[in-house]
Amino acid sequence: MTTLSVVPAYAVPAPKAPLERTTIARRQVGAHDILIDIKFAGICHSDIHQANEGWGEAIFPMVPGHEIAGVVTQTGSAVTRYAVGDRVGVGCFVDSCRACEYCEQGLEQYCLNGTVATYNGREKNGEPTYGGYSTHLVVDENYAVRIPDALSLDVAAPLLCAGITTYSPLRHWNAGPGKKIAVIGLGGLGHMAVKLAHAMGAEVTVLSQTLRKKDDGLRLGADHYYATGDESVFSELRGRFDLVLSTVSAPLPIDAYLRLLKVDGAFVNVGAPEEPNSVNMFSLIAGRKSLAGSSIGGIRETQEMLDFCAEHGIGAEIELIRADQINEAYQRVVGSDVRYRFVIDTATI
Ligand SMILES: [Zn+2]
Ligand SMILES: [Zn+2]
Image (cartoon, rainbow, N blue to C red; front, side, top):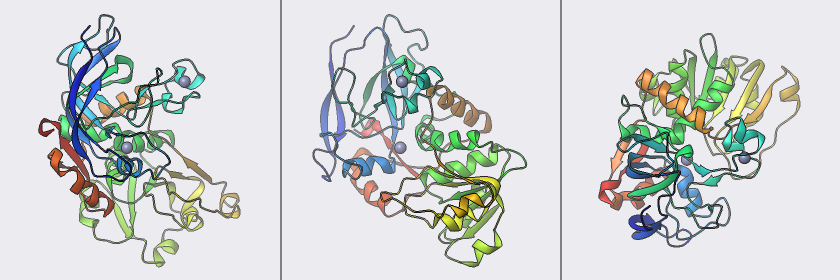
């Protein structure tokens, strides 16, 4: 056991305030814990939502970051899954109740008693959690995943949120050969959805507001690319898709998108608009269609996703930044000016 350690971090001191360098205390390495030397941390749009309290009251100071990749530097006495030197990742949660029916099924993200968020959350003892914009993290070994050697840690970091958030619904709704998948939006989530659905063997179409990123979309694995700013696209693509996956947080005309589905097709949201949306039930009734959502993935499925990415040579497209560029990066994420994920080199913290 080591003593509680004080480590450097970048924190949001108060709602909407810029991030600044500070120090935080990490708990001592318990029997079931591993100490991770964080190498890279991705910047997810939800980091910004939470720093701005866009999703409700938050805990400050806040150290965001739930796309974490690093190396194990110490293990607790009872740890069996990892050894010093192992390459590991941590995603959006660091604990759950471990007893409810969903935890038992490996669907910890839907824990009936609530997961412990990697940051802006509270441990079971009430202590606030701090995320990946830091040099070190102590986490229970059961809430870490192994990053295969074939994946570089920098491009692997965003897989821990953007990757699993898109992989899980693609698997659940059976993306694969013979299936036609539409991805709405080509951002952090969307570009991962395109790569993953393509690797699964599906026919992939990107639906974006403009054709600005068309070349990128096709290079990343899309078969088709349409601008939804052109109304005629909705009649041209009517009844085309088995699955439409929305990765955007802007409100969408749901009924128009439901018309793009085949019979039994599903419109699935992983992007989260802040305001409620309405849907005409006839849009679902005609064609036995589903309107659904999906949240990240469990630990087991996150490991499966990383192994799949290693096998298919898939990482995120990233812009690597220094820690003193985080505030600038936040502004660029808000302006959709990133291709396609900012990743912080935590050696610069
Ligand atoms: Zn995220
Ligand atoms: Zn549970």
